[in-house]
Image (cartoon, rainbow, N blue to C red):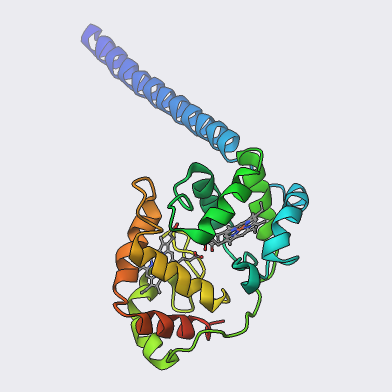
Length: 231
Ligand code: HEC
Ligand code: HEC
């Protein structure tokens, strides 16, 4: 009988020990979740599009009132572009990861504009506003064979999507409804190492060898002509 009692006691304490462990685990997990949330929200405070609207006034001088872009000023469209991508590019310009190469004539013009934003919160705010702008339908300016471009675009689909809509999980921006002359320029810049060669440019580094798949200027123009047909 005595044996029985002590055995029961052992079993009981074993169980309560397990429960205590579980609860401890749970508390730790909860803490991790709460901490995680706090850290995330303080680093990535959600952008405020209303504040962003004010900030965008200076941007619209080149990118247009509705972020439609402006060929005469060499400024691409921002309207319709993915918010996370706009944030990344602005941060890259600010950090000199993009637009710091002396041969990057147009990136050099954009860099001080990104740097004029007071802080990371302003970057988030202006990107949140850009995300509310509608993608334009830019005129076709590049002469190329869209049919040949469609074939050359096959490997690009893996990251940018069938319709050039972009993919957040693959870090690839939207290409559709962007100005064709800008697509050409970026492909040439990637090929020449004017963009995507900075050691800290994690995503540009992934894009560079893809641009190099387009061996000739003709192929670059063809693929840009094809992208300009995508909705
Ligand atoms: C003086 C003209 C000018 C102003 C003002 C300007 N930009 Fe730009 N921006 C450019 C040019 C030119 C480029 C293209 C750079 C290149 O060819 O790599 C560019 C590129 C960009 C890109 C990269 C687009 C892409 O698809 O990768 C973003 C994002 C951007 N600008 C946002 C802004 C924001 C936000 C502001 C306001 C804070 C702003 N720009 C103000 C001229 C300007
Ligand atoms: C492995 C994935 C991947 C593939 C495949 C790929 N890209 Fe990209 N591409 C990216 C990423 C990531 C970026 C963003 C780079 C950055 O953040 O600066 C990018 C950026 C671009 C840009 C710049 C857009 C802008 O707004 O400035 C163009 C243009 C582009 N890609 C065209 C192409 C074309 C054309 C092909 C096929 C020949 C292709 N990409 C294949 C991942 C890819």
